[in-house]
Image (tube, rainbow, N blue to C red; front, side, top):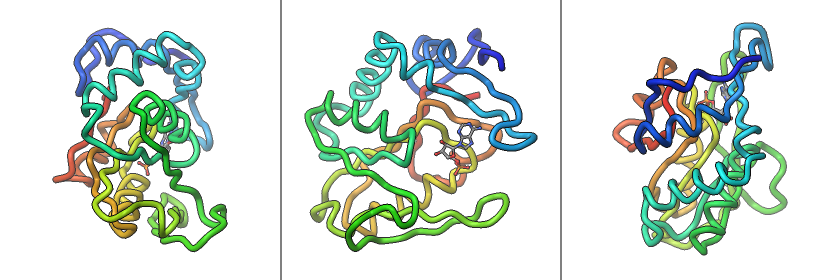
Length: 188
Ligand code: AMP
């Protein structure tokens, strides 16, 4: 396990913010399976000053009045979404893995390297035209984000923005989501 390198890093909110995220990420090799370098953001969540700075930076980037609700993607996205929602004075909607939501939901399935994953959102999660800021911890191939943005729109929301703390640029998630804009605090 090593720290992600912090010098000369880049991100959509400038170098200082990118360096701040990089300083609180641990690289865990071969998790959850061989060949994957897991980007562990728990140190960032656990550091109160850094967490607050990151959350305030995301709200500033989008503008406090540009969204009505925040969507977090299970499970680490929940941590980020709830904090942003509280800071902006709006509500939070969870997008969950299949079978967890108690009421009628929309489902979106997408391919993983091996097999398939399904995400769900309650059908009554948004009122028509609700502006939704979608957040997650890490953007990799973009499959999770694409399914989530699709769910938000099917449920009547309007995607107001999509932010991740860390983007694995070499996996092409940003290109997959185009022309929808991606805001990543740190791109590696
Ligand atoms: P993807 O659908 O490929 O963009 O994967 C994104 C989702 O999987 C996010 O919810 C991340 O939390 C998680 N994820 C994928 N790859 C990694 C990684 N290398 N480190 C940490 N989380 C990851």
